Image 1 (tube, rainbow, N blue to C red):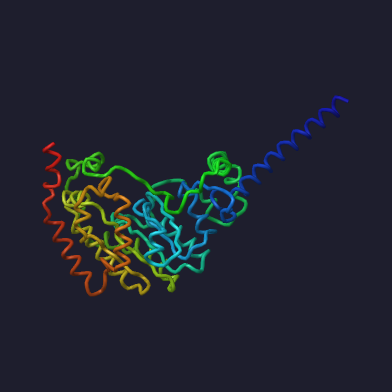
Image 2: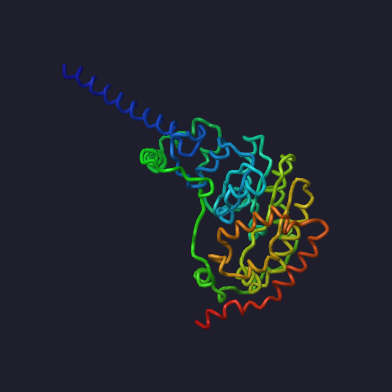
Length: 358
């Protein structure tokens, strides 16, 4: 009798465990906080965050014909503004701190799954041109979300963090009647700007002349490999899609660092190489806003040497809509020469005078 009771108790425990596991699987698959299995339900509220978990699902299941992508330099774009200016139906898929390869792979997955993308707005980080083509900032990524292998989905459906911070958060938001994160709000940030904030993370004293400040075969190969593998190879696969690319307009303090390191020539030669490659692609429109001195030289727009406020993202969209800053075969060399002359001869010391006076 005792053995029979023990067996029943054991079977009940097994059944309860299996039932609980099945319930967890059902909850994760049904709510699907990162849109791995299906598009968002209209009756549920969703918190869009954690780009490396969310972007692939956006690319899989959202309804769109345009994509905004890039690093943190693209986070403050508002798809609604792009849609109004360019007549698109866009989604935003930024990846903060991403290298060119990660952005390229994320974009390519989206383009493979959606055959109706007519426009891609792609922020090309200027400081990434002289990095290895496969440079990565992080060591681990949720790769199980990026493929179609159902077996590694155990990392998704039995993930404690995803259940608590994804499933439960969305359920609670829905029950409380809180709205979903909008695509405009997704990954957007508001930080204080101005020279004083820039100087929290920038020290002129740390900028020393670089011993590797030339642009030789090594640098040329690095740029061409990065641009070819991560941009042009994708662009050429989708000839009917227009790729709108722009070099990210960093602040005058970024150029100050290049000047102190004596690598402005090296950086602009990398730019020239990349530009010449990209201008050969018929479905690429390439923009350069380094001559927008009213913005770049105004530190009130910047949180650090590189990151600009949402106001600048809005300006960029309007510049693109008006074809301001468009590079062509006829104008790129002249504009590059003027750019190099301006930033090599700028009075950088004048930037910091007002801080010294305080």
